[in-house]
Length: 523
Image (cartoon, rainbow, N blue to C red; front, side, top):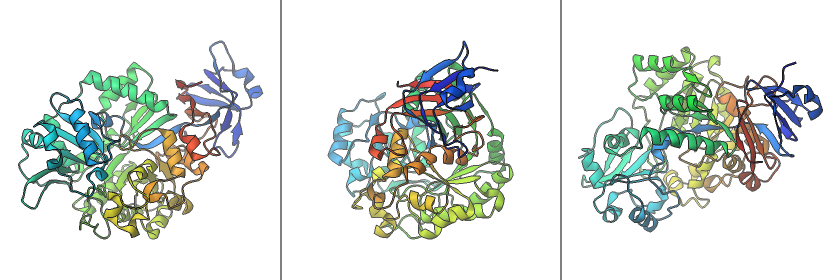
C-alpha cells in the first residue's frame, strides 16, 4: 500500500461532501486527498517519509478561495502612501504632507470618495501641500485617480481626449483640468512617466504578499487580470506558490478577431499552482465615479452609458469566446450593465449555464435577482465593499444612487435564496484580502447593505469553497474534502459555520495547505 506525504489528525473536518460530511483525519499523497475518515482508518497510510500534523481539535475545511483578486497587478496599485484610513479632507492633506515620496512623486492608494465630503474630486484641494510635486492618488475603487498639475504636465495632458472605452479626463465648467482621471484608459496615460518598483522588488513583494494571503487561510485566488505571467512563472519556479492563481486576462472595447484569438491561445498557459483560465470584461465602471451603467441616471445625471460604447460588440465577443470554450467574467455593477450581461449569456443557450459569471452586482432589482438562477449565471460578489457605504445612506455611493436603489445593495442572500451560485472574494487591493473578513462580512454586510439579510455561516463557507469551485469550472476537483480532490485545506481555531461572525473574523489560522504543501503553520 502506498504511504502518504501528509497525514492530518485531531481535526474537526467539515468536508462539504454530502457522502461524508464530517471526519477527524485525512491523508494526502501527490497533492491530492488520498483518504478521509477517522484516525484509526489512516494507520496504514503512515510511512517513513510521512509528515503528521495534529490539529489539536482545530476546524478543517476545504481551502478558502478568493474569487476576485488582483495579487499581481495590485503590486503596482497598492504602492506609496496607504490612504485607506483617511476619513476627511484634513486627514488627506496631512497624509500627503507627511508621506514619503518616491523618486520625487507623491503616490497614494485606497483614497475613499467620501473623503471629499460631497465636493468634486479636484487637485485644487491638495495642490498647496504638494509643493509642486507630481502626484498620483488612486481612489479606492481602482477606477479613478486624482493627479496633480505637475503630473498632468509630465504626461502631456492638456485637455480632454477621446478613448475607445468609456473613460474621460475631467474638466470643470471653465475647461480647467481638475486632475480627476476616470477609468483605465485615462489613468494609463500617467504610467509611462511614473516611478515603478524594480523587477527584483516586485518579485520579492509578490512572494511576501502570497505568503501573507495564505496566513489568512487562503489557498487560491481567481485573478481578474493578466498580471505579469512571466513574473509569476519565475516565482513559481523558485518556490511553491502558497496560493493557486487562476488568471483571466482582459478583453477591452475595440478588440478585434486577432485580439480574441490571442486570448483563446493564452488559455491553459501555466505552471505549478498557476494557469490562465478565462477572460475578463467590463460592462461598466463604478457608482462613485459616475460610470456604473444604470437604468436611470444617478443624482448627477451620470451613469447612462456602457463601458463598451457598442454593447452589441461586447455580446459578440462573449459569444465568440464561448464557442471557443472560454469562460468569461464580466464586471457589472449597475442594473443596466447586469441586465445586458444576463441577456448576452441567455443568448448562448443551455451550454452557457454555469460557464459565465458577473462580478460585483452592487444594486439590482428583484427581476434580475431571479434571472441569475434562471439563466445559470454565477454571481461573484465582494462583501467587504459594503464597508465603503454607510447605514444612513449618507455616503457617496448611496447618494448617487438614491434611496430606492441604495437599499438594494449587495443582495447576497437574495441571490442565494433564489438559487444562484454565489462566489465570494475581496477584490484586493480594493479591500483587504483577509479571507476571514470575507466570510464575516458575507454573514453581516455593512453600511447600505446592513438592512438586508446576510448569508448563513454555511452559505458563506460555500461561497469561498464549493461555489468558488463552480465559478472556476473546477467543481470536480476542488471545493470539497474528498478522495481524489486537490489537497487544498484551511484549518481555523473556530468553526466558520457555527461561530459568530465577529469570532470568524478574528479566528486563528492553524494551518494552510495548498497542493499538499503546508504553506502556513499557526499551531
